Length: 286
Image 1 (cartoon, rainbow, N blue to C red):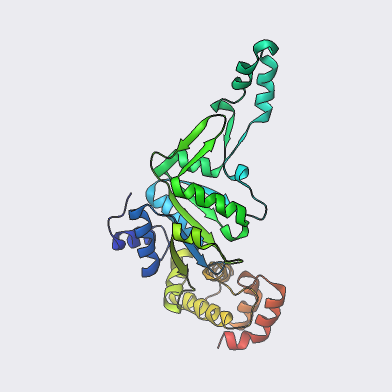
Image 2: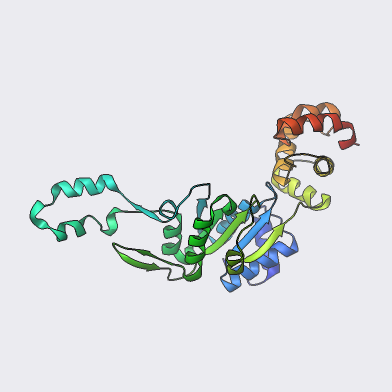
């Protein structure tokens, strides 16, 4: 499916249980229409990764995820050779075969695709999620810039592989470091902020089947107050959903101090933050 308008895309996202605000829906629509990568930044838990998953479902495309981390390099993101199969092949070759025998070891069948190469080959049939790109180093970021510029890569033993059609590309960042301007210029950009209480209430109702309007709103209001505390890791909508699911699992109909205290670990995931939240619980539930 290819949405023909922003409103169409908003409906498609909601149909897959993702409530996007207008700004995000516009950014996604433009990224799809212009075939440009979309860089999403925001605090952890606001739904950046889920955007790519939802887009894949809407488009009926394969989600290909590249999880970035400190020390990741091009070979881990692009391709590697199946050395075990190459070794078996080498044992069957005539040692006198010379250079021809070496060529036999670097055929397509021995190539192991990693996320970037897989996405290029699948083209428009894929959504490429480059997750937490801020965790990678400068060298890898420069490599990504090169790939996203031409949507092609070179495998020395085989040649240049160019995408016949461009995959949808979503990059996410938690801003643990500032990304280079060159990469940002290659992408469209959107900052995903925490939702307001009304929208978070709707998110909780959508993602937690059977939760009542009053419970969903009390969860959203309490989570919003928790974000106002001096926490190391403020809760996002993902934690609101977990909290509502936890309260529902206890068959509780409202978020009273006893239930909130018992389920606080669903929304607060840091020991020091938990101490702060426990002390502030009366104000949070006010």
